[in-house]
Image (cartoon, rainbow, N blue to C red):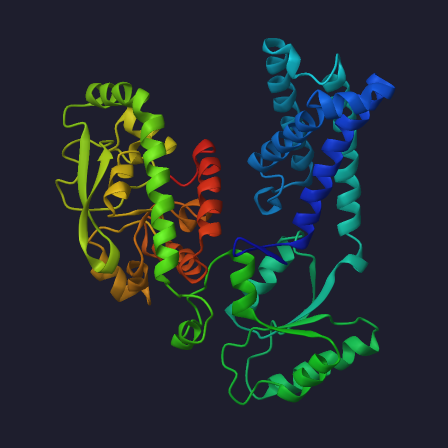
Length: 458
């Protein structure tokens, strides 16, 4: 896997993206050469043709990203890949038609974009077919043995079995073997069987929940010296899922980890970026503010803005500001999380929550310093003592400023139960461990997609 902005991406995904960037630029370059012939050099270098092709490439990749073509885990059927690919090309064609009709000079030359789209459609569909054929070949897959028979091992097997983009093939695991002293004998026998059958193991994932007296150290050392990768299941799960699983998490994971370092210089830079992003956001939203205020006022009786106490940096309380999306008596029976199709939410409020418009006033909290632009979402003080008691390491969320958006928001969504709050914490811990300016910018970028796709809100 390849690490970018402190997030791990499958090598296959990076190869897919880079190849498609070359295909897009190559299709429009070929169309330019076909139409202009010897004048191609002039169009590319003196008439901004190269810049236009670069813009077309970025637009195509953005549309592909928006339709989850680089996140195969979100696509259930293979035919859906080609359907979404045609949607990308359709949206791109519509956008380019509108732009060239309004601004004819945006075209590289007469009919170049039209011809380039024809080349691109054929090339992308053919490439996706070739790509699916290539990744199915055993030579491009790692043979993996999962050492362990508990829930952690099962979760590893489930992930690797469903995610073809990772490129790992399970050749064995101890599904029906209880962990204990017999694990050594079973593992040694499994390795011998694989060698006899000619099936080379490339990676061993150690997923044993209790390793005392059961870990086959001698066999693992031999494999390690033979070039086999030996990896801990928790580390692999963290890379694959983008979260730190709480099961099996120990204080030593925090003490000896390279992450969880809150550097003052880093926090100053993050604070400057948050302030700048909040100021720009408020300026861009200012023209729409009167219309939103009027919509809230007409939706139901009550104030336009809604203030609520939340827990912030160091466990200190502050008041968060939002547009009101619920009836004024929504919590007459006491505080509770919002639920799907919550009857307390007004009709306009439902739309505002889906599009995150109700969160815009929190930009003021970011300017004040109560929140950062990126960070764990602030929880209500009514729930914090209970959650801290039920979920280990929950208080670690308060070691940094809460955020308007965050890693858990773009990767998971809204948590309205104890189990969902636990899983959101796993994403928050990953963010705190790998916190950096690059990761913050990535989260801001993915937040736009989350809002446009209306994911994770209730």
